[in-house]
Length: 282
Ligand code: 8IG
Image (cartoon, rainbow, N blue to C red; front, side):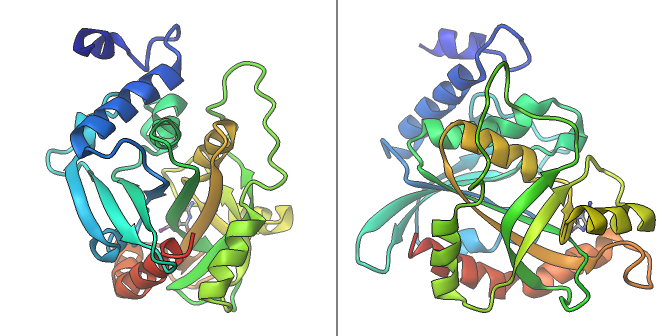
């Protein structure tokens, strides 16, 4: 079994990426002792604190130990994957898989690696996926630190992780049911359309204006390709963005990564509590 698993290579075109996801799910079931998980969380910039307050950690290990996840480029910068037992509001328990370290499209490791986390979540038994991110915003009524519920998206990368004639319907990409559930926790959460750019550079002011004309409220470098892959494996998706900055050219100052991290840190405890509250009702 171990030999078979290690022979599976995501970069090999003849490998079915779902087979690698199944190997990853087997590893997770064995390592955590949890046969099936219910909900998966991908924690983006600013959202990391949620994992600490969600519930009881049942197991925790470096994400790169899971089949198909690559070693971090910088030692010590890899994420941690955790299995957390969450006591839901109705008294039942759900097993939540927090997949640390997302692979971004701009890393150039290929779309299979971008999608591997969500495919692994589906193979591990999850039915619901919560995708979170930090991003730029176009609506000047929103201030840095604003959380926005994703209503829809524009995939502006020109890429997809779907392979072959996989005609996935994206009409209800970000589930209306889950948005309604999130609104029971916080009725004031605005909704928005997320536009994924390839990155890693931030947009020019002209690109931000274009994004607005095209119908975007938020601009970022993740989430859209993952969401498409997740619908491809039947997951129901909730998308939550933390707007850390206004898009380039909307705010007068230049965008700095330090500023973005600072806004994420300032919002951290508040959005962690919000996410934990939402997970307790989904
Ligand atoms: I945090 O303004 C964060 N991520 N593309 N644009 C894009 N990605 C981002 C931004 C932004 N802020």
